[in-house]
Image 1 (tube, rainbow, N blue to C red):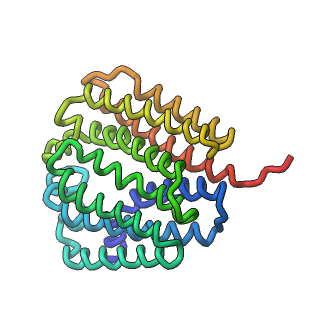
Image 2: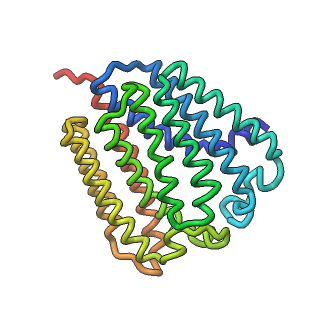
Image 3: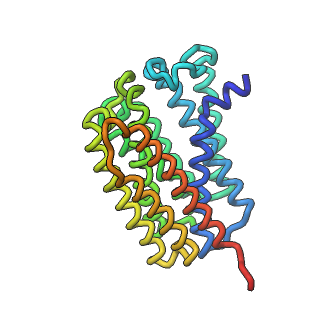
Length: 288
């Protein structure tokens, strides 16, 4: 039963978001005092809030999950976990996560993580995901909150680099999410979810993805120009941005769009992991 409750928190999504939390924390730690304990508290608090949002998402999406091959075997869909019990579980996670951030980080990071929660649960899950092609854009706002929370946990104030970081991860969400929608397009069609590849076709979605990747590249280098990343960051950002641009700008047809979108998705993971990791490595003193 414990394993079942863990599964409805979507551990993969939590881990992915914690990588971006660490990126924001590491960026802020370049200019502000921070320690490992604060990082641990921040990661734990954000993890619980994200887990709560994912549980609510699982509860609310039972009807559409039952129509998708990828999700039709989820425990809430099959009735193996009671929806009311899951909701109580979500509330406990939300209260515990926000309390930890408020008491052990700072109030500003708590307010921001709650805003991200509202965007994900109410605006994305309960509204735009089902009704509008702009659902992905709304979801990208909540997806860009974790690195901002990591940054604010250290600084307790919003700066230019905090805004750049938020925008950077918001832009990253778009081609990443469209790639998923593309190689799982049949599932989205079956569930009636109006994502861009389904509503407007592969070619239009590809053009949007290329534009977002270019914008991401610009902001990635803007962080360096703003003095928030060293030459190690520049080298890694250049490499992963080149890889993502190269794969995204490849020709796409009805015959290869699944393979192409999976490649874009895989490289997007390398992008976020590379940039997040190098921000942390730059904090390590190197003596020659």
